[in-house]
Image 1 (tube, helix red, strand yellow):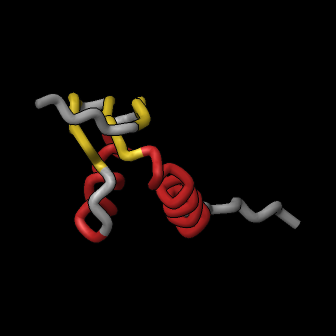
Image 2 (image 1 turned 45 degrees about the vertical axis):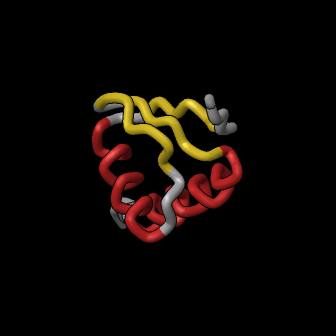
Length: 68
C-alpha cells in the first residue's frame, strides 16, 4: 500500500543543506534528502525550520563599523 506524506520541496545551497541536516538530528523533519541542493521536508515543520534558519543567520551576521 502506498503512503502519501505532505511535504515541501526545498531548494538551497549546499551550506544551508548541511545546516538543515544538522537541525534534522534533533527534530526529524527531512523526509528525503534528494541531492546537494534539494530536500523534501515535512510541511508541518516548515515554519519552525524557517525560524531556526533565521536565528542562525542573525547569530552569524557581521555588521561592518562605519569609519569615523
